[in-house]
Image (tube, rainbow, N blue to C red):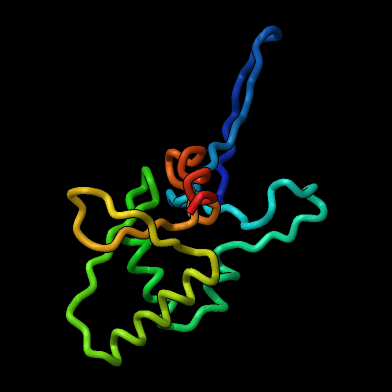
Amino acid sequence: MKNNEREIVNVSLDTNDEFVVRRKRKNRFPPFQAMGVIGDMSLPPHTMVATDLVDILIGLTKGGQKLFQVFKNRRDPETNLCHYVKPEMTRSDQAVFSRNLKELIDAGLIKKTKEAPGMVGTPYMINPNIIMCRDYDFYSKLWDKL
């Protein structure tokens, strides 16, 4: 029997019996990380201009998109912190990296943070208002202080 076909079944019920048919629905959504909107949360909801991650990424250059993907893949889901170790680069590659990094910072996607002892690489933080981390309350306050 195919998914959309139904089988007819005869059922006998007593007067006090109840027959309930429920259709179990599959959860068709894969597990994903919650994404939030960027805006001033102090404004009333009807006046707040909301921008989501997809809108921001569409406005980035291809190099900016790829660099954000690198940061996203290296982030700690608890804190949204990621440590980036720059490979050996030529002067022109360094200029492209700096330009892409500036684009991400200007878009409000990442910020550079203070160096943590024992960590290798330059620490960056992904905006917790865009990609939420598990300890959102603490790290959203930290984001505002950076």
